[in-house]
Amino acid sequence: MNLSFIIPNYNGEAILKKNLPKVLDAVKEYKKGSVEIIIPNDPSTDNSKKVIKDFIESITEKHIVGKTIENINKKEAGFSKNVNRGVGIATGDILILLNSDVAPHKGFLEPLLKHFEEGIVFGVGCMDESIENGETVLRGRGVGKWRRGFLIHNKGENDKNNTLWVSCGSGAFRKSIWDKLGGLDPLFNPFYWEDIDISYRALKAGYSLIFEPESRVRHEHETGAIKTKFKANQIKKIVYRNQFTFVWKNITEQKLLLSHILWLPYHCVKAVSHKDWNFFSGLFEALTRYSQIQISRNKVKKIFIRKDSDILKKVNI
Image (tube, rainbow, N blue to C red; front, side, top):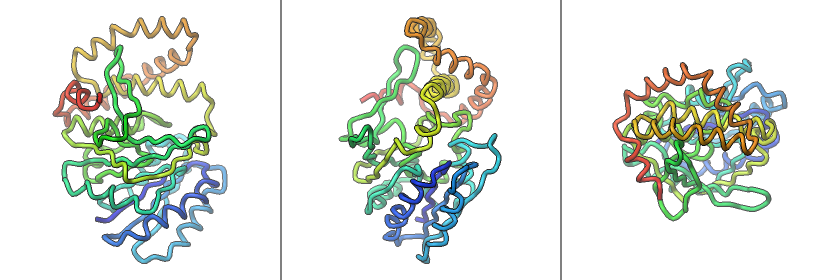
């Protein structure tokens, strides 16, 4: 299998210098096909462009090539669009998506790739050694349930292989299925929920997702672009907006949609009582995009073959 690593960047000069050599070290041992390391670069204002150029020129292995694609239009920036640009020039059978603040361990590829021998597998997630407040938290498997009109997702126990989603910051995806699904949806720009969205679409289209605990990466969230470039209120508003977007786009069972509507007054009252004005900002912004969400919904409904309730039963454990 030929592999395409996609490492989206925005103002990540320091972490690129730190982590790109670790990515290269981890892929040098792969001899079962060619490898390309693609670094799509959003309009960075730091020295990222030179760091990427120097890294690509430093690659000497014959079976590994480096690529980049520059975006100079701020209106076209954001995680989903940046990843999609990288995938657009990828030639590999398997896409391996890593955030710029992620460093893979040596040996992480073999346990990850073995699952793609089954053609129904769309994505395989890694075990994240997530650095949070100075401590290492093991993440990677996601579970979810329908509660009070929303899909609520949580960290799952790492002793099972089923998962609700595969992270687009530390996961592998079959490119042929990625293309059928249409890639990441820019409606979720600039960040959050986009990987849950594409994973859920894959599950509803009949494909499978796997969590592989033997494939390990180190993820230093605090150094990433989101935490360093966005204020807490901005992040919270975007999370709310994308939570609404996910439901309006992907949920098709009438009983779940009805519960979403009936529980909305409760959530509004709760937000007022907690002075959580970001909830209303997120809701309002989602409403301004409603027509776009419906266009996206009509496209994805065509490939859905599974019920929401069937999927939720399997990932609520």
